[in-house]
Image 1 (cartoon, helix red, strand yellow):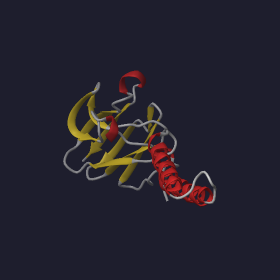
Image 2 (cartoon, one colour):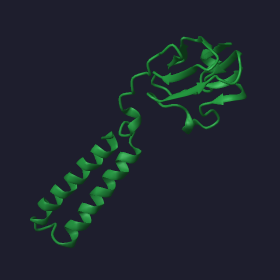
Image 3 (cartoon, rainbow, N blue to C red):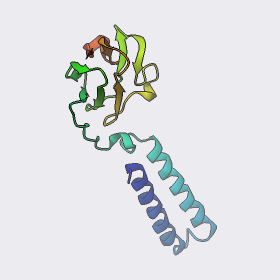
Length: 167
């Protein structure tokens, strides 16, 4: 269950408990108690939607996928990739896994200029890979050396690498 759903359930339970308590009080009875309960529930939902740390982004990231003879994993950490360069055979898959705390992209190209071969979401910060998310590409259409970069980190931290595809 997500952090947001647990928080909502807790807020709703608190509002119901408060309603029961307020209904028995002379100052909060009838419609006043219902209005106050609804207001508290709406406020709780708003806080869960806006306050950092209450979203699913703060959840523990997933484990990186396992490497196999036909799948290589590149861990995108904060401001670098590990391994930076991978060598695969034609038909193999590369998985870029966000193992850091920041959002990342894997975008084919050089010096921040995409070449259009693949893109995990550059140009749109909302689409950047969150911690624990991954992007994969099967290199079955060509061979050669293919440079890539992380859009938000390539210039300041040289978060770049290459995929070499052998026949």
